[in-house]
Image 1 (cartoon, rainbow, N blue to C red):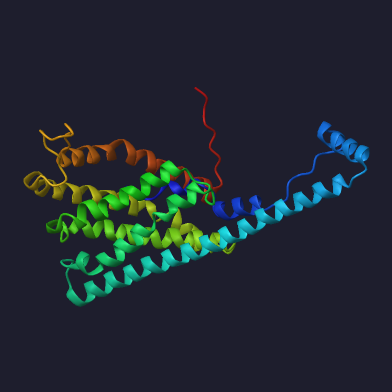
Image 2 (image 1 turned 90 degrees about the vertical axis):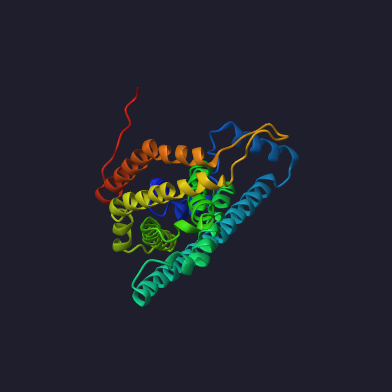
Length: 287
């Protein structure tokens, strides 16, 4: 499904989190027991314990600041590279259609670029795992894997459907979405976010999200006859592991999962839009 719930973090959330990670620790006030114990210990042994602790704190703060700088630099490079990659993809799609006048053969002409940059997005899961991006590993993993599922297990594996019009629907939706999303993150990390990018981030999805989901569902639906006929990716009994798996029914379940998931993600984005663009505050009611 689409990549939308990442907007749950506030604008520039990654950058602000990294900056806060680099701030020095707050010293204990003189009235706290820890402060008194430290001072007493220093006075008793006649050592320069306070200066030593201050030095350790400065060193730790410096390490956090260096980590924050490196993480910010890497994320900036990553988002610039991904923005450029999806821009290249968009230009290739427009050029193909202007030259050929048809969508047939479009996927084949851009599939290498699409596969590379969409697979490269696996790094976003690593970003969450090591903590440089304050987003759920589970949420990011589901988002990235759903895209890879469409790229590798549907359009790549079932070549007869590559010329379906529905493929163009999700390709256009993904491309515009990712150019907007990655440029939004890039400018946020640089602390220079143009209002148009912010506006686009929280308005384009209103049309692009339903279009992308429709394209994905129609493409999976178009793949069903080929999957059923070929039995691809299915495991039949009997076998030595005594396990069976039917890819055809798996695709049916996948399509059904869009019914509960799509409204939740879509309305979440609408709430985020009102919050970011109009400053509305939402208070969750206790059960």
